Image (cartoon, rainbow, N blue to C red; front, side, top):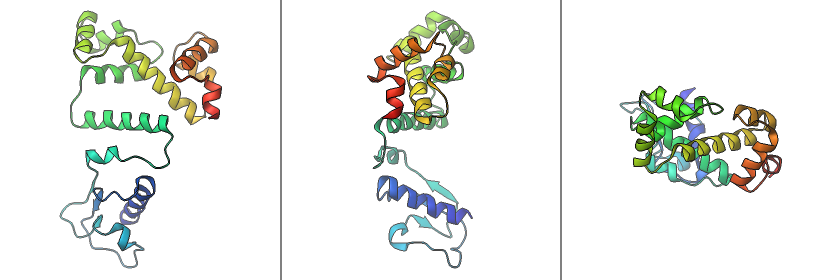
Length: 192
């Protein structure tokens, strides 16, 4: 099952980004009988009898451009992937820590609450973010904008629900802010 799913994943990557020879799947067992593996496309990328079973996905592979992407969704996905890679490598800047806290409570996460969660003062929070070229307001707005765009692209909730989740007092306020961010009202953005 792992072998089959791995081959499917490599084929999917071929469809999305074209030939990506730097992405390989090494498996610690021999090739199963009758596996319909297209040797021309997966040669050198699906390796059997390896010393370790691992999907090797180099950080540079993140920069491969998806051929069928929505530019907004693609940019958000890349941003999220980079943030997760940074988390895994234990490089957590203050802006990353603040971003994660804002994502937990987008509607009611003031700078005082963030500072309390990080066990620092609000002035220290402001200074640390400034050292990274960020402001709390700009960071919060970025998180809220990304959240709104992703939820609208998802299509499973109404714009009113998204406005409530983000702490807007009414749909009109949210619509005004969203149009300022993207140039489109929420309903127009969803139809694009």
